[in-house]
Image (cartoon, rainbow, N blue to C red; front, side):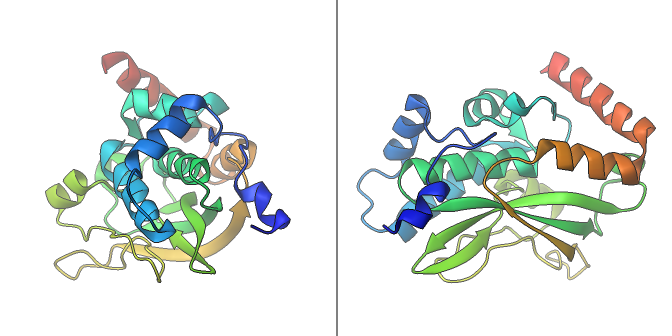
Length: 220
């Protein structure tokens, strides 16, 4: 593998790809699978469905994004789930990085609207990985159970195309709109994430998110 790809196989802030337990788990999940594409599929489906999607989880400090902490918690939002998938992929030799974009979720639940008054979700996160000589995007954000409960389209892994959040739900209603690319990072840009969201949502909304996340964690 070319030397310039080493950075996409190494641990980075929030991407715990070098921990022995993460390596063992990644190898277990991909045992007997011959191709990178088959391995990626297995890891994608695991990260998508094993960790339930929730925004009511601690998002500070950086340790909250580490793979083992996300797995122990059993819940996470897009950045945490993508960091988990990125760590697992790197652990079995699939060059991976974290991609970011601003999105509008047209089906955002009412109880989240006051936390995100502009309607824009900044720094939505997905994985970009090198498969078949191409960088492809894949988001493990919404788990199967959630999508079935809400009537959303399930994001399925593809070995030759991007697997991003769908533009419509199963009834044809507008769902997710990608509005701005934020590029990719080797690790979790936590300071950027907090700064941009605070600038848009306001300190009061961010503090409310922190409080709700702490309450949910205490009740878990």
